[in-house]
Image (cartoon, rainbow, N blue to C red):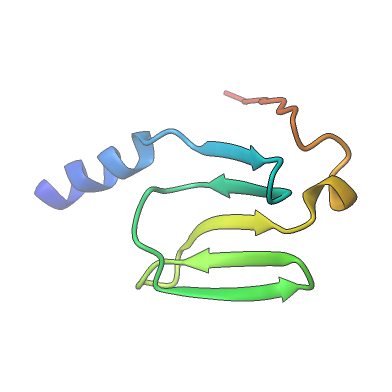
Length: 79
């Protein structure tokens, strides 16, 4: 039962999106847990994983060149 509550608590954490204009890095954090491993999937796109191999966050370097409008976020949900 405690594991179920822990998993629900993890799912209820809000996703965070941050754009740092000084460094020109866009970060999307899906879960606020320690990063165990990072891989540069494509040049300038870094995927961060937790110890279990779950994706934790995505970092986009030189975001102003890779993303149309890094300072604007549109959120759409279904259901």
